[in-house]
Length: 227
Ligand code: C5J
Image (cartoon, protein in one colour):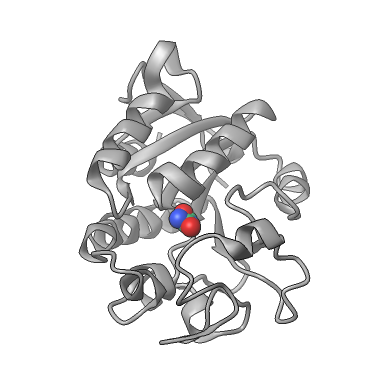
């Protein structure tokens, strides 16, 4: 198992990654958000903005797995009976296509449906935890914190979609809990490129108020060096 510290060029300063205590946390790379014909596109979004993040995520995930480091995936979604869906969340969005309705890939954001699952390109390997989260943040109403504690993880390298919603909420939750977070710029994406850019700037602003921002090539170089 890797145990060294490697320094990753990042903003606002280099990120000192402790390989044995860092997890790659891939947020909500789900078919309904990313695939043509899914929920995201049915709402009028251009999924090509999100799909740009697939190849960099795959490169990073491949390098991370090769380095023998911890990988955790998340999925946003709800129980089939929707008992964990706050009415306030249910009411919002597009009235023609709500959470739990039948959409192009099964019931929208319902666990077990095809659209809720992770895209095949980044599919979890057996043994990689998948966190099913009912909210935007990966810590709210999930067992993520217990899993991180048991794996002795205190740093999170965060990727996924969307940058300003579930990635940002998770990084804010993690930061308040004492985790050091590095957001990987080209492995995160938004339907709204200006929100993506601004969300990344917010993370690293004021000396890294929520964490650090770097790109996938810098992370891959650092973890692959073998030091
Ligand atoms: C995520 C969303 N995953 N935008 N969800 O960001 O509703």
